[in-house]
Image 1 (tube, rainbow, N blue to C red):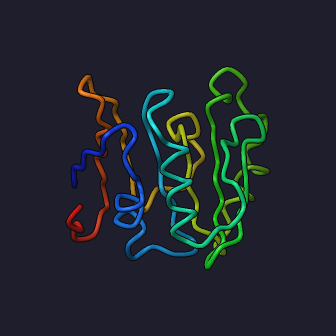
Image 2: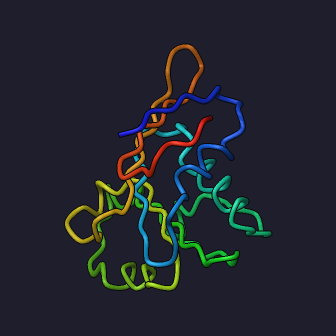
Length: 144
């Protein structure tokens, strides 16, 4: 596991580049952390790194967004499924095709049916105003 700290208003591009290293279509990244920790901000930085030109927003109400970049990106946010479980997760699983790199926020909600992650990222907000990132499945860390 690799650990990183970034100021709350700091640039997430270096951590996004590190997390993306060696990944491509078919890989799945699970993002966990409290509300407001920066999960969507990290996905936004990753999408910018991958050349996504359109605005990257939280898919909390849509559940899934798909973006075109150098490789396609799928962004799932399962937060609202905590209180409204899916009757049939097959529809949402259909978004996790092998042609795209997938980011899944709140993966613990979909644990029974989600595919295993290539990487896990846990984000915590610290009292000193920093975001702490713990990355499992990380290749050799870049110097941040």
